[in-house]
Amino acid sequence: MKKHTKRSGTGMLAIWLGLTLLTGCFSPADGDKADLTAAAAPGERTLVIGAYSVVKDAMGELLPAFQEHWLQQTGERIVFQESYEASGTQARSIAGGFEADVTLLALEGDMDKLVRSGHVSPDWKEQPAGGMITRSIVVLGTREGNPKGIQDFEDLTLGDVRVLYPNPKTSGGAQWDINAIYGAGLRKAEAEGHPDPEAAAKQFLKQVHHNIESLDKSGRASMAAFEYGVGDVIVTYENELLARVAKGVPYDIVVPEDTILIENPAAVVQKYAQERGTTDLAEAFVSYLHAPAAQETFVKHGFRPVNPKTWDQTQQQFAKPAGLFRIEDLGGWDHVREKLYSKRGIWYQVLAGI
Image (cartoon, rainbow, N blue to C red; front, side):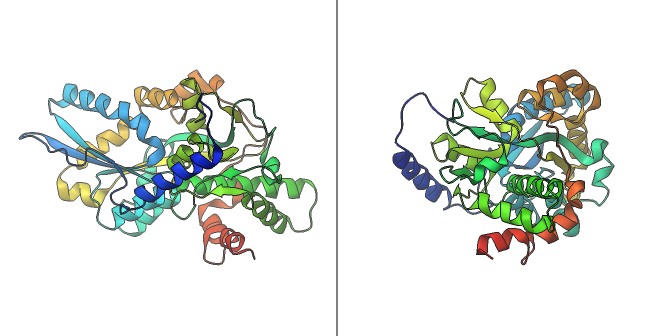
């Protein structure tokens, strides 16, 4: 977030690197945990939440609201234990033994990992909106006044532009960012009649990545780096920037003409909820996340709602890019994981300079 005091870019980078090294001392399971030591009093139950980092602020309002809702509905008092991590890290943590009752992740692919590991039921998509609780789009955030004149993804290839996005190996948000850049390059190549659109899209992604300033662990960590003064432009979720602008932070938001629709799922971690006797509570909480009150809270924090009535009431708040596309337009998650993120995929070729 750009502050109103003047900072040296070198000094801010040094501070940020120092903080990154300090936070890097913790294991993935230790990340950004809020109140993981909270203990339920006699007669209370504990609901353990394992979520991706970007949703933390919204959860700060949603958890107390559900707590009160559940008390009024059932007379039962509940407490929460919370963990916020990069989406891929959170999914691996749950698969590795972190006993979350409910998980909120950045992308369907991370949820699929928990289905394959036997932690989440294969029918998790039978919830409203196919199991998704929020939507967003990939946008660009710049310093106040957009001093580099950024207008679209193409401008991220310019020689004097320093770019931020997180690491797709750990961050679901980063995968959305890379998908958006690659997809925009693919669409441009197809529109220009390029003989090999995929090769052109790969080259476009390579040119953007050449200007990367920092690959952080999560979308929230990447945003924090930007706040410390690192980089000229950040590729991120629309909601991350809308929430900050609403608080008076002077960022400019640039909406690319071609960008991707982000969809974020939530599900009961059936394996642990059954073991802990919290299945009814976990299911009720996931259902609550789809209800109008919760969806309005998500909107307050910059997310696009999945509830149709809430969307009808709030859609005027959100940009509608002409070339908005979905993951299905890139072949779906299975294809994208193989094409971009497998060991021989395009993303790893870009990293290796191939």
